[in-house]
Length: 516
Image (cartoon, rainbow, N blue to C red):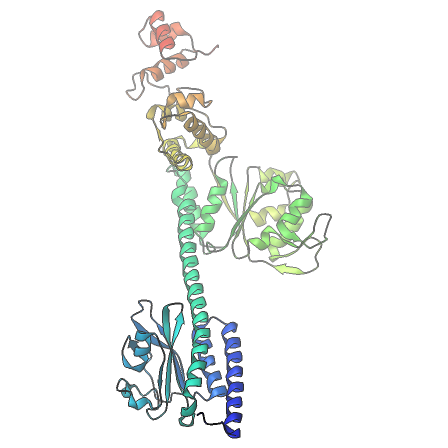
């Protein structure tokens, strides 16, 4: 026969339920505010004390190896606690909760022989509640609470409340651990990408050992340290963008964005919107607000290719941004500050443009703080073999197969004028690679790609020696024909052959005879 509840006990029960509901509500709000576990869990323990009287409490969470727990939050403990205090599974009452994965409820903590009195965290004479913090079958830690002495009659109810709070904590801990792992993964991926980008756009990717290129590399190394505006000059196809990338990714701004824009690709009205951005409704078709390239490049580098193509009116707008670091979006009235390093590039003679009044002199001086001039490929022919092998490796990676280039193919490349510079060389090698079935780029593949075979002096006008051991028979015959003005009889005499012998070799070696 059950004993009827007194009015006082009924009122106490109602009061406890109200406190429990309020504590659950407040705990859920605290846990939803932040994923900073230590601060959040400490606030949870404070709420449990205020609402339910759990005057001593702690939360332990397992370490990555899962074999031990450390304190993540502590409340109401006056005794100093060593920050490295740990519990292994089965060690003390708290370690027992971790080991068994179920609650431990004690009317008097000192009655349990496993209680570690020497740690001084709890009152040995008071009740004790320890519940596991679980997510699914996995125990992530322990919530340990100590209600006051007068609360012994409601221990079971307090234990149920503690389990509900532990479930809420478990969900938050799981989410925090997932976010922490995702951040680590993102940071690792970011660092990997940075290393990849630096390798791709570093100095090693700019090939060249001639004196002129060594001077360029030294200028790039020096200017990369500072925020100086750089003007990269050179013919089309010499690799101006590659130099700009090398400057950015080896500078203190490497962690920032590298944004590029070809100024010759857009008319003036679109160029202004593209660089400075626009507000919604600024013009027909401006359906939303849009950031410009300057804003996108904030804390990074903006590469403006073909800077010599912009109009005189737009030059004034660009000058203000370079001088003041301020801009206004098209259709906007708010002035925006940007921190951008500008690297410009051109193949034009800007000095002549300034002289002719086509390019603002003040903008020219603002851009030309640190000029870097790239030599055309024909002025560094000694670099062609190394550049060609580098490009072949690049094409091989893109095609997903091994590629190689023969010495005879390189000799053909060495005697071409290369009006299109490195870009023309890369296009030639890519065409040759496409035509090569076995992955070997030989002389025939180069000739098929559209390069005309010549054997001409590399520099200084010196005549090619016909007894040069580096020349094969085909190159020797071509060299003799070029020296003889493509008159076969003269070429035969140079080679100590008869006209019939040289005609036979022209036919068998598949030499295309030029008409002079």
